[in-house]
Image 1 (cartoon, rainbow, N blue to C red):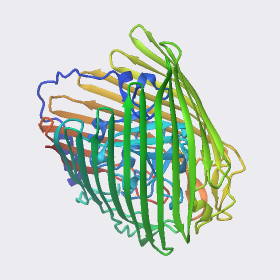
Image 2: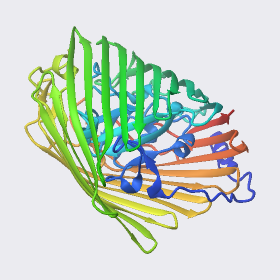
Image 3: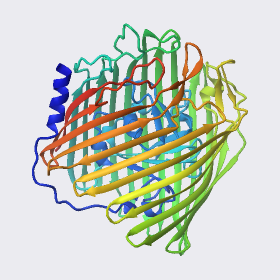
Image 4: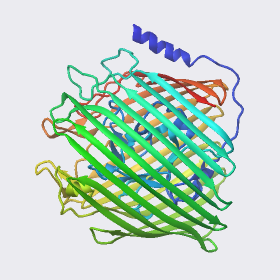
Length: 620
């Protein structure tokens, strides 16, 4: 009875505050939206040769209290395993049917990765969405511009900064339940509090952010006892920028993150008093000099990671990645731009002894405008690795734009290669290391199109075909990493739709079909879809309904080491916002897994049931 009353009160909240409809008609044409990531320079979506996903402030502000993994998991072509489990669970990123190590993360243009981890990737649990301005996702092989391991996707994250004079403070606070489908006690067991300060005065800009997130109430493993496994995340950051002249600016950012999360014994699927501790400290620099048609950029940074497993098999891990990327954009001739650069990456980890490698990569990328309707992007990069032979990767990407009556049409195709070297842990670690591993080679062919109507409707469709050769896999029989003998092929289709159906109604949807052949497609759903509708039924109140479908997929039962098919499941979320003071104080209520659906994400692990979160967003 108590649960029913709470659900009825929440649904009833969406009916309050009905008043006049907003008349704000200011909108940016979908194809005129500015992207930062695909060519490393600001460009409009109509000039892009791919279906780039951009998650802006509108969506991020409606996701207060959610993790970065939950936000990204809603996008086409992406599956983040663990994002629906207990907060703090280990995450597995699968983009276009690939593995986590085939995805690279950039924060403010600086590559971030943990060389001491098994996958050598960045742990998204260390990133606080409250400090993020936007996320761009480029899928497919992108090693030409973004280096080694950019084989299935690049996550290009930009943090918040002041763009005009003044001092701006944003405070977000929320609290709610953290419970499974079976344990609907509606106790307050999770909270999130964040402060982001940004300012600008003349040529100087500055900012700082702090965040703390806590969750309790759910056990990692589903057992009879179901003891609570807590999760705590603390983040902080600061930055300062200086516009030295009209053409020259520099900025520095420091970042800190700490994760303290409990977990259980995954092999025997039993409760256990285990804890994982992780800490990140980073420093990055960005500089730009530009005159007319020429721009020179320098991105550099270093990130140190320390982590500890407190368990039956304890371990301490320490790693550091250091990178620098010097590149420029030049007008070679009328209608032909060139991007040329030199990047450096060093990864170091303490694995008994200190191990490291370096990569020096010269690269070049051309943008040719053959006519007002046709442009071609093409590039190449020479990977020069300290432990392996040099490897050339390349990309070719023609784009065609035209207008047909009231529709803008874009058709694109691309072929690109990527190069992945084994991680330090795979080569020299304590668990299954193999110093004889060879690099992995990937390629992606893609063709697609986008149509945008003047009534606010847009639809994008892309077909992709990825190939993986010499993939680094873990042999569960020999308990050692090895290069796969079989080639793996991944084929799929992605669809992305948006429509401003009414001045007050915005609809978005996406669908992904993924078929992986050559090995077991573990935890990769063949079919995945999402829908979102936002109805602003008054000038200060809106309601958002989200739906997600995750199809059948394979997972491994570590009790029997056999693969099982997990059933498909659907989830509904409801989110209501109300502005007490427009652009100043916003209250929100969110209910995830609205119908308390029961499902399995990882065999033996708990998942989130119906959960309620209340909070506020304050701009000062």
